[in-house]
Image (cartoon, rainbow, N blue to C red):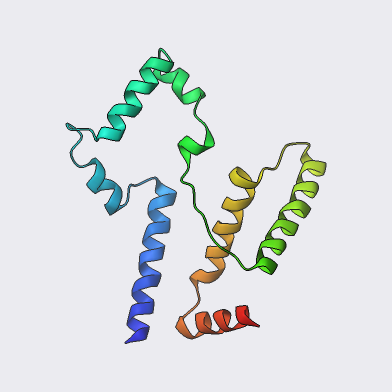
Amino acid sequence: MSDDRAERLRQNRNRAKQRAQSGEPSANDQSETSNPSQPSESSKQKTTKESESSGTREDSEENSTMKDDQIGTYMYLPKHQHQELSRQFHLLKAEYEYEYNEEFEKNPHFYPLAVKYGLDSLDSLDASEIQEKLDSLDS
């Protein structure tokens, strides 16, 4: 039975990954946008603020920040994992900036890379392999 669940989870992850790559909205996104004739209260406020702060839509797109474009995600890590994540960021930052003379930032560059390739490495694991990985975290 756990093999069936693991297979369903794997299929769901693959479908979500394909939707993300194709730009297709997920089922949750569709439910929020299924009734476009009645915008939510927050979207009304956002539209009002955008029209007040800038005259055109193009101006508001140019002025958008990472906080507007991405969702904040917070997590608690053991101290040693946080230190390792920070150390790895600083190493990659130094190497990237030296090589390409472009800024390498934590939120727009490093975290998405760490999540994407971390998830890819977990994608092919079955339940017993996940259990082994979890056990290795404790040691």
